[in-house]
Length: 153
Image (tube, rainbow, N blue to C red; front, side, top):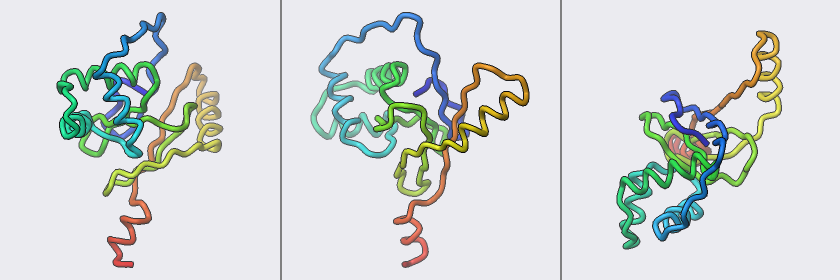
């Protein structure tokens, strides 16, 4: 959802463009979009580029970056920073404001809505006189499969 997400694993919401410019539908944009539609976890630009190359689709790495950033700017994909500080992208099923549970081991992502977090953020902002507030919450841990592998169960 954002451009320039902080390196702490969080995600930010970019302000809506004043006049959204219509994107040309190119073969490359369709190919990137098709891969994102198939993936369930966040993917880096390099990983996406490798998938495209493996499929024989000719899209340069620079073009992949531009398309992903454009999709993020349009709110069609979420963007966050992984543990290495690298931007990763995912087309989310939830179109409204939401958060993610992310597995540090395998990269599995689960979309979550958190009404208690929303209420806390609004209350905290109001208590301190802040307005036009945005927030992000990303929770990192180990998914059940990775936990089972690590404990031998």
